Image (cartoon, rainbow, N blue to C red; front, side):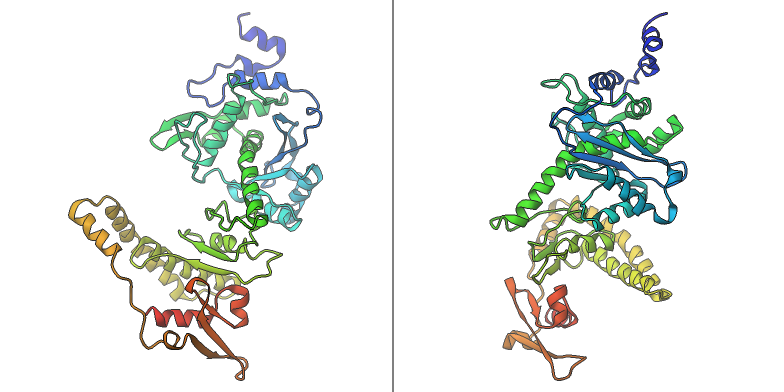
Length: 437
């Protein structure tokens, strides 16, 4: 019998007989070498450092947990989807994570498909800050040789697992994987292509079509190879929280919006806008979490006539719709009409933004002149500009008054309780509208 069939029959591993695709991300031989390095127990003295959780949607979809001790991976923990109660899925899955977690290891939850959200929230309720993994998100990382980027975080995670398995790196590969045929198939199935935007790994949906099942084990494993980045992020968060000399934390809305606490901060500034109001609320709440004893100011920067001004208006309309739904009210038709109108206006705004980005010659000069134009003058009839304060009578207690003044760095502040706790109030909004009318 010819090789590699003879070795496959001898060892009972028919994955060894399969010829790798030309554009296969992870070579089969590298996974086999990692499985040959594996021993039943983790290296002595090496604690559990990360848990990758591929959440379940119930039914035929199992919950898979991959536990890692540096380079040593424990056998996959599988909970059949039929054993997970649908009416308490998040609480049940969070309990499984807590029961298997050791040494305060990082918990990374695959949020793709929406199944991980409830588990994520229940873990936070139990004082565990899980790290969300969203494979579709944009990646800012590059390959180890810095030559190529990635089209999304899923492509990054799978490629970084390839790099970790590479036996040609200095000192060889540290990865040791259990002898698990399904894990082997999951890891060696994806293919890739190099695009103008970087490495693009085959979509999970396409891999599932070829395998005839979900790649849960492989997903759980590659999710935690990025945990070193998560550790670096938590180290930076700890410095911001504990080191008085660190005064500013720069975060993007998604990565800085969940799973971290930034109560050392009292001023939140959004430079860019997200399309989803909840993402902004989550990011704001990082400074409002338990332990915050100071007033927090939240500001959004955007200029009139830019794309952000359209998105800002659209966000306000979405928030009005969300408020109506949460209040168990039938949304006013005008709210829906405003959102539709905002979306219609957005298309030409996007076209103008793209046209401005490509502008050259006289057009570029006119754009630069507009950008350097003098901002709107403040209204002269605003008493705040003359007296330094603007007084309002309380709507609940006519004997009480509140003062709006210029506070830190020239920002408007109010003495009312609402501003103390939220960093904004109707009095400040009214003054701002009149001053910058």
